[in-house]
Image (cartoon, rainbow, N blue to C red; front, side, top):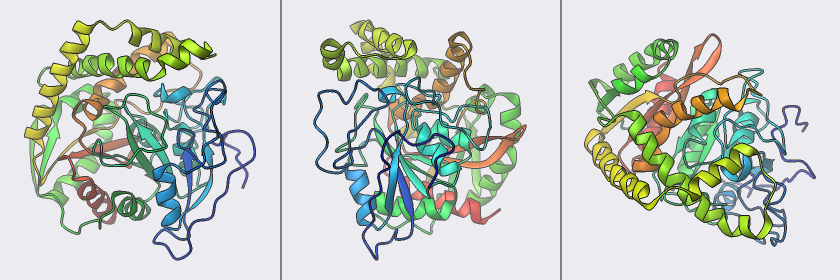
Amino acid sequence: MTDEIGAFVAGPRVRIEGRAGGPLSGLTFAAKDLFDVAGVPTGGGNHDWPTGRAVPQRHAWAVQTLLDAGATLIGKTITDEVSLGILGENPFDGTPANVRAPGRVPGGSSSGSAAAVAAGLCDTALGTDTGGSVRVPASFCGLYGIRPTHGRIDMAGMLPQAPTSDTTGWFARDAETFARVAAVMLGETIPAALPTRLVVAVDTFGFADTGVAAALQPMLKRLVGLIGHSREDIMAPQGLSVWARAQRALQPAEAYATFKDWLDARNPRMAFSVARGLLAGAMIPASEQGWANLMRQEARARMAYLVPPGTILCLPTTPFPAPRASQALSVLDPLRDRITCLCAQGGLAGHPQVSLPGATVDGLPIGLSIIGARGSDAGLVAVARALEAAK
């Protein structure tokens, strides 16, 4: 297999056959280079990260689970440096090409995984999502992508960033493959029954670009028809930007704590934007973190109210399609901030979220997301499958 889009890490290509006769036999998958693969260094998207570290002797739980289910691992994919990015541009390993939006970013930090699936190089791929790193590339690359309930998936053998927000997710081009992988990863059968109530988060649609909100209306109409009962409500009464501010206080502070010893010992090479983010995390005062933790409690209470069992909430996954690649930091910083406004609820509240493909703006993919009660991951996958069948 050739990698003309630059999705896979450099070096000898990894290939490990899945168990014969498993439920995923015949499928291929890739793993973001934050997941351990036995006998292969975990690169983490930064060339100084593996230095002085032992080569893993066992597979990460997620990798082993897919192999045991019969899927074949075909390689490790590029990530933003130690998962600290949301657009998918990496100065060390390069930026994977987004075949669905040429000349534009694939989204990060699970950039290579999303790009590889979008290009048809594999059937599914593992990513991680802390502040949007599965949801955003799923939207930008026109894929199904899931951020599971926080704590639902075993993250053994996965390089952490901010543990109170970190999750393991996956991508697929079609809903049936997405559901097959989900049944294995979640350890349960995808139900036939669907949720019976839908909440449309009108503040999120108002926050998105006008063209995005308009492009999602046909999908939203099909979703309403599928679920039957719908109503409008506000997701973040305090303001989407307030929830984003809380996530920007908690996640960087945790990330700095995660990488502090490495920074002290190695003084690693890294992109300015990544170093700047870690420095900002080191400087967040306890008072700001205390406020952010209170806001997290408010966000959790709000989401529990909005999506009790049997209810789902929908919103645009991202406020705009994939931006052009290689833009200046001064252009990208406000875009990152806007993305966080629609993704912060994931890290704050920990509810499962699935990004659904099916809409475009000027030919560029954009995702519609559904969020459910904690633990309702399989129900969201059922909606994804039913919505595709209803086209």
